[in-house]
Image (cartoon, rainbow, N blue to C red):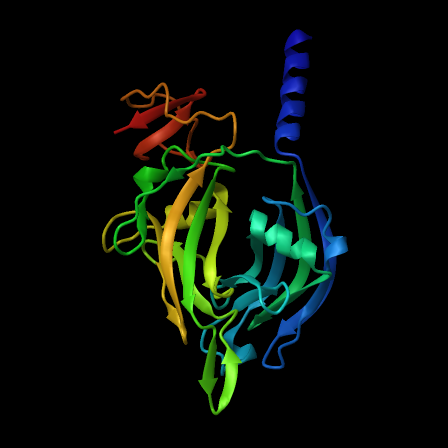
Length: 311
């Protein structure tokens, strides 16, 4: 009975730690084509938006034939107030039933709450559902770890070994110059255009595209869970894994990288403890992303609640 009580309490604690509410705020079928339709979402329907919460957009189909003149492929956009956009998310042509997740930074949450409505747009996609994901409040360490980037803005996987789950990476970038430009005798704005991206080192997995939000310094953040697919992407050319933080120019605006800072959830360990060099002799073990792996896996894994290195 005592054992059963302990298991029940452990389950309740687990639910408390990961408690979240996922609410549907729109459902239907909207093809995003050259007419630039949009789906309005009222901020009041999103709930108590804060840093770490998210907007989840379900794309039933990504299809370049919807608008053959659109050269950038299937994409999803979230317009906050015509001057502020969440990072553009690109999808693979032909993909079906994909959930596009936008996690809010503190800056994003403040801007969302300052308005009345979001506009969900895209190109060459069919959107069928929009949901609001509200997590329990998560506190992060006040002082993060600034990661080392090479000259190309690349961060290798070994720097990320001590971060996982809801620990977050904050990508800081700067926009300089003017966001207005002349084209065809008329002044236009580049706000909302892409000025950078966050991808896997191999380039096969794109996390997001960065937007030109104006002149100044900006940031976008992702949890390690959201970055995991990109980090683990196999780069066959260089046999390395990690994240590439690219920033470039857009019309009259020039972008540059500032920093990548990693923050752990408060109360979690900041070091890898109980590391041993050994071969595993059991079949149930997991990588740092919580994925079950087999005996051929090399690196740090979790076995019986401890971190072990397999060589």
